[in-house]
Image (cartoon, rainbow, N blue to C red; front, side, top):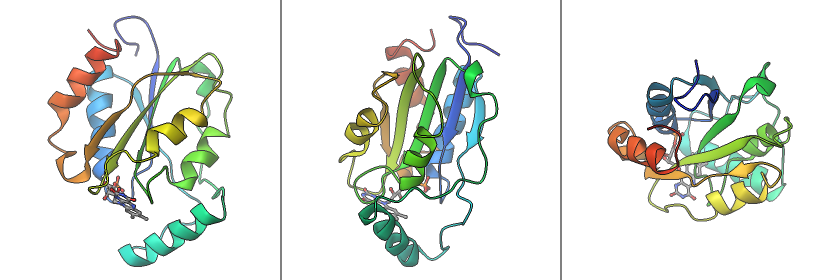
Length: 165
Ligand SMILES: Cc1cc2nc3c(=O)[nH]c(=O)nc-3n(C[C@H](O)[C@H](O)[C@H](O)COP(=O)(O)O)c2cc1C
């Protein structure tokens, strides 16, 4: 399925507790795109505090956690939404693994993010820095708690950035 302007859409997301997944689902429903969940080969601890410690170490080490699977047909997509939670003020490191796994030249990449009160911080700045070979469009950000009811805001944003009519 393609959008009204004939583009094929992928909605890739990383989500530990479901908030970012809720936004991914809104985008999928509104654009008719395909969903892909970015998962690490080794799951993060279920315990929140333990997870923050693992994530902090990965950030400090500039790690590239191994991913469970790849998008097999990335070359078919024109527009790639990439969603993630704000972790320690930026993208979780598996997003960097993901971005470095594909040739994104010539594609439109668009981030979306949920946070726990800190807002955007460096999330989108770091995203743009790491996707400089692609065309970037303005991202969508919301607090994790509002994600499931954010469909109207997501729709407004998708119209603003010219992905849907
Ligand atoms: C490891 C970790 C680090 C986090 N760091 C931040 C942060 O720096 N700023 C913030 O606003 N929220 C932070 N959060 C909260 C998440 O961004 C927020 O709960 C988000 O909606 C979770 O999305 P998810 O349900 O898709 O995993 C952190 C959460 C985790 C697990």
